[in-house]
Picture (cartoon, rainbow, N blue to C red):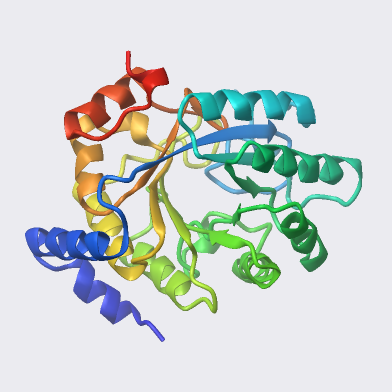
Length: 314
């Protein structure tokens, strides 16, 4: 079993040593320079009954996000094709549900997964809590991965969410892993948690029976009307340290530099890649939050000497 003390020892090394160690692990287990481009689409927006303090889609808060019904399968197929043409290899779909109900809408999501996979892309969904049978059906549709973040440590979690327990989240992760679907699970940082809270989350993930193949690190995007609307930005070096520690802890996983990139300088993003991040989401929105435009991303990748898809190389 991994312990907090082990993770603290790694995290609090002198930064050059931590970065060097993360780079060694990265090169030994991943392909250097391979940064996966992912697209994320909100397929059902707003109206969620949960009280997650960070979320613009909670029905409990008055936010700028309007409630929208589930998209059609055809609409999603068109958006997935557009993402593929712009260089995405993974297409992620999010629905603002506490948990999906069996019936026509869940059947539509199953069909969306099949359509995305038919394009040759990885397919990932985040739909809230899943039953074992729902996980099985998603696997039958050839779903690549299921995203269900733990968000923060077990001890800090009740400060952010009260309508769903930490163990509820872990149960969904067990259903997903048992069905044979890859687990995508990570953190939201900048919600008032401590550095140890972030490390405790990594410990929780490392001690899962099936460690995640994908670890997204999201920086909070404060939204007007939510309890965390005035949260300050995460310290840049703390973010770099967390990504490096995640790379060392999960050598074979994608460590995804996810929400919050539009608030980061180009130099900070590059530091995150040097620390072991090897995936980004592109496009103007991440569900309902802003994201850097594709020209800015293209310029950043070009500055690093990394390949830029021809569709966004202007």
